[in-house]
Length: 81
Image (cartoon, rainbow, N blue to C red; front, side, top):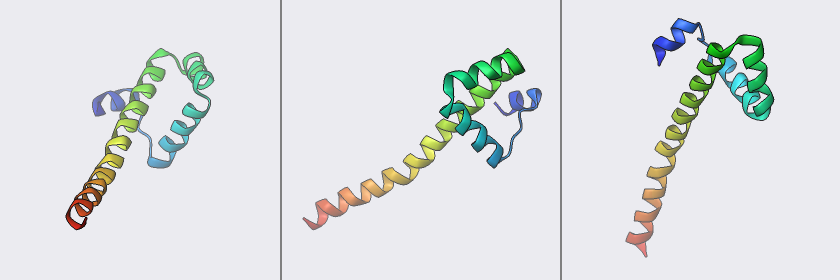
């Protein structure tokens, strides 16, 4: 994945990726068409892959926090009740 990002030159910082990701989601069908017509198929495909990769990492990070907290709540409830 990282090699593909380096090949296409799609190396973005945290804030840039956050802004682009937010705009892509908010204006979903139009932003995808805009990228397709303005930047071409290769850049659009890479951008979508990077956004999906980022979304998966975000979901896993949220689960890494929520699951242990939920586990502690359930165990505490079972032990103390």
